[in-house]
Image (cartoon, rainbow, N blue to C red; front, side, top):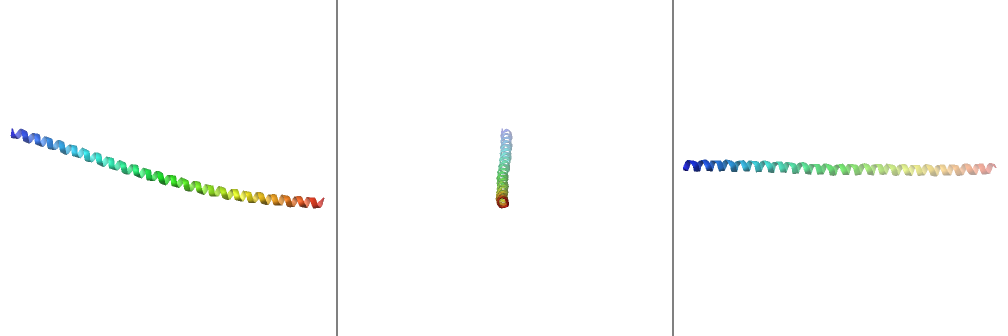
Length: 91
């Protein structure tokens, strides 16, 4: 009976060790998955910030172009008015 008891204890101990090993592996895998997900979220945040910066830069360029175009329009309007006065004086 003592041999049977020893075999049962050894089998139970092996099963317990196997369960602990499986649990440790699962925890490690979950931790790694959590790290990867967190890294992906950080990358996502960085991507959105990068896009925001690009959008701001494009908006600033568009604003500059609009100001330049408005200035050119004003200049052309002045030139047209000046030429109109010259034509009126010649008539």
